[in-house]
Image (tube, rainbow, N blue to C red; front, side):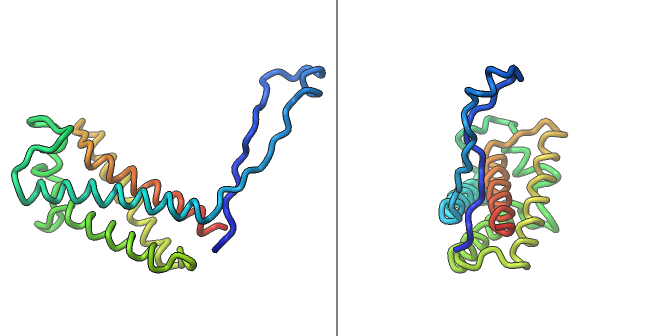
Length: 165
């Protein structure tokens, strides 16, 4: 397993007086293990899979989703102009991407990420940013879509940290 990522833990003061410098607490580096980052990435992908699955089910059956009202962002995400790519629901594509990413992460745990997978994850993160931008620019916030994209962006940021360690 690769080395973890370092974060800073400690307090800093806003003043620069000489007497305060003597009593300043020391900053300590706290290592976040690669194992912990791995499990956070798994959790983020599981959340993304569940949210994408909910939206996929919504495409198949006309169910009312928790957190989504009539004519809200979820309805717009399912029936709006950006809900399909070449006639195929985006939720299905996302679900496939997240399930595939989760399986790949679990199967290649010690060697993750490799050069190809980090670029696939970067493209996926770019897709999430585009869809977040679309939701915000149209004022149509879908909570299930947002949960999917947040999970994907967490997965991407952890993948970048693991790639650099």
